[in-house]
Image 1: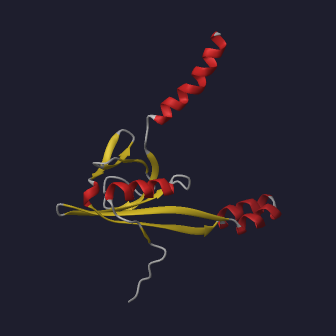
Image 2 (image 1 turned 45 degrees about the vertical axis):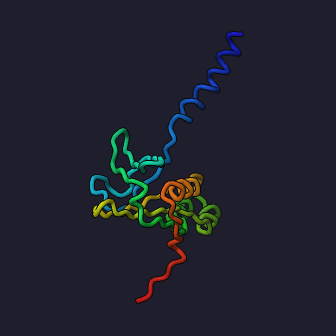
Image 3 (image 1 turned 120 degrees about the horizontal axis):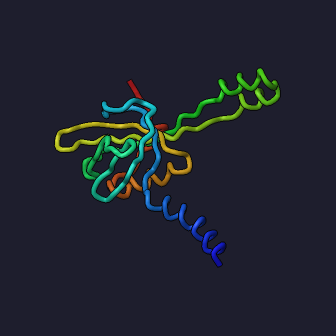
Length: 155
């Protein structure tokens, strides 16, 4: 009986611990948050009354959903040439296959105007969490996300 209880606790405990944190892991790519550098890992919390970016346990930015003026998204697709070159030294066959592999990075951009305080941020979301982050942002802001890859710039 004690063993069964111990097994149940081992299975249930991590699930309870992880489910309490409703944050999305993102990586800051750039924008108007001057206190952090590009590439910094953050947690994004999407609540009905605010959108928060946190680093460790400190708030980096808090944005009211009503202040969001635009949500954009896009993907940066690049070939893994650097990885292929490294593997080609070890094994020519594996290196050649890696040169053909693609890697996608999923980016989301937010712009806001909070009573005259304008700003913007671009961040990279995990490929498994990307659609959920977009859906959450669209839901709390009431704005439809725009595909940045489909936009063309004309001079």
